[in-house]
Image (tube, rainbow, N blue to C red; front, side, top):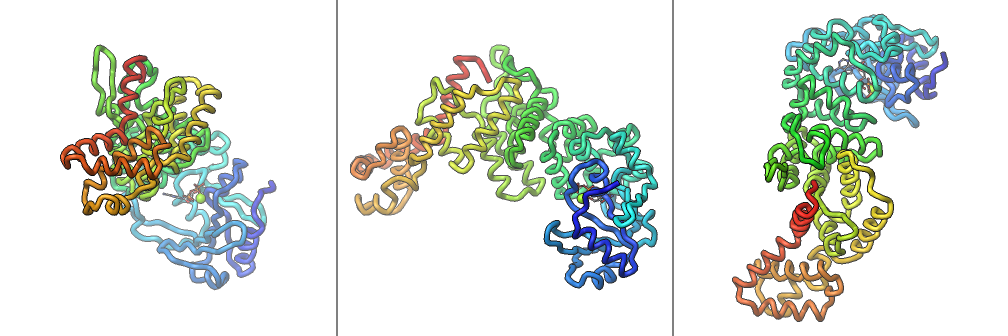
Length: 481
Ligand code: ATP
Ligand code: MG
């Protein structure tokens, strides 16, 4: 069979062979070649030691304890070249106690997680070494551990989550013994570092069908090691407008985001947006309400993502999307000032992501897509207000000019004045005019300090949350969401 292998990878293999070192392509790339998928990265394993590999490739680098030497290429990034390895005892369910080099490819394959990942391909001869019948499993689309699943999961519990990740990525099924061993060994995952769990979680989320792995994680009691918050949503019924439980709804929303190839932070927001519904559920006249779930949800999302050691930037974006996902967008009724406040709340850089989160939410509820007409109208309203001032920074007056104008000293009263001016400008952008705002500054400065503080606080609350009141009003009228 002819495999599509980049020339530079072939060259590395040939260079090793010429220096007298047997070597093979191995792991995920061989699996993907056999499946006709494009490999993400290229791994070569060889009988050479790290020192020998470095001698053969003087530009390579070796910065870890596992023997992996990185060889740079022009077109395929870093190719990892690793000596045949043996792994001895795993006393902690996550790290081999000792890594030693092996002198047979078969020994290296035996330490690998699943049969489909334990196949070696000799690039020059096309010979395949497949002692665990990985090819058969690939044909049947089955994920099966190399050796006894309980033992292999006992060595490294992350393999359980990797198994589910491959279910989502490859549309394979779990072999039944492998599956029951996961069910029984789930609690071993508590020993695994959050970073490793996060990396597999991200791969699940970025796959085309993440719901299937996460749903299995729920059934096999693995979910709580990703986030304990999810489990509470399983089986929580919603109200008449929702056909699905909270958990099903979140999975459906995520799958829509995946189908649309939305970026990671939007997918994570789709998965988390209603996470607080179980906490905020109240029955009012036989109807479930979830008042404030987006506020609590933003907090829980932040906590869950911090626990998983996600980068700060992703945490900020995702929590904002969760916090503001409940905006009202009925183009028949919405005002420009409400759209302006929405943009102000989530920030102009996240507006379109928020729209996408909302679309995922909507489809995840089982509702049809928004009509193109209404969507277009809403989009044009957003574009229109994006040109308007939406933050204190964009007002034509600032703290300094206010102090100059009135002779006021610095202090919170300046902030209150700015907040009041912003509230007026959010209602009517034309008011962002120097002479109008300056006359308002003088009037406001003349107010009794306590009165100024009261009006200032009111303006701030309005600027931040008028949306919510509107939503509540509409929900009352239509009895939805
Ligand atoms: P991907 O397509 O995401 O790169 P992959 O199968 O290549 O998938 P990697 O994490 O890159 O996964 O690992 C490369 C190979 O190393 C795997 O195919 C497998 O043979 C082996 N491997 C990785 N992690 C483990 C593990 N925890 N236990 C045993 N073998 C592992
Ligand atoms: Mg790989």
